[in-house]
Length: 116
Length: 113
Image 1 (cartoon, each protein chain N blue to C red):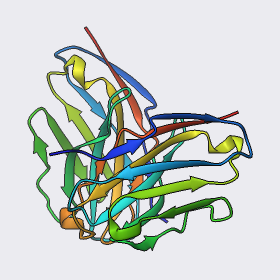
Image 2 (tube, rainbow over the protein chains, first blue to last red):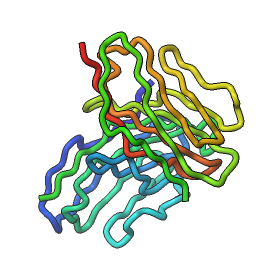
Image 3 (cartoon, helix red, strand yellow):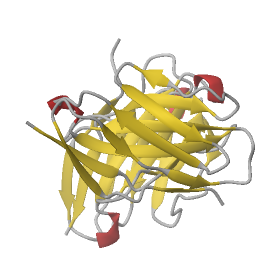
């Protein structure tokens, strides 16, 4: 079974530039998550989708971050414009359903973003 | 608000020995789930073990076991017969029903040959 795919794996940009990350979840997984993991910290949820609807985006800095999951499959996370403090690993995860009984999240390899 | 604390930023253990990683959490909820995730260097995060709060029996997965103390809000992970492949960041995580997962800051574990 193919895992969660993310691209690119690494990205270096200047501050105020834009960047986009892509995630393809495990086939059949209804729930998709984007996390931000700053060095030395645990992952922090940015946004959670159930199919193509947003379940939780309470910690998403909406003035600069946006995400979409068209057709309820793959997803794109965008930052525009980037700030130095956005340097982090962006993790995508997916799970079969939103129910906690089946809520094992499967993580992708992450995209390491460096903002200079 | 729910919080997860891991008081050991770094730990090391000799190969084949046993190590225990600590985790405490704070919640007013009665029903919830607790997890330990492993994140090896430059590799994907994977679930190690899960505990449902309503279950009194501690979860076990091969060499990994937990000590769940609900009253103390403590959830420690014991790794027996440590192997070099256990070297990783370990994150304790917490979730109430239909709510987001809250991760702790992590413990970096090094297994020394």
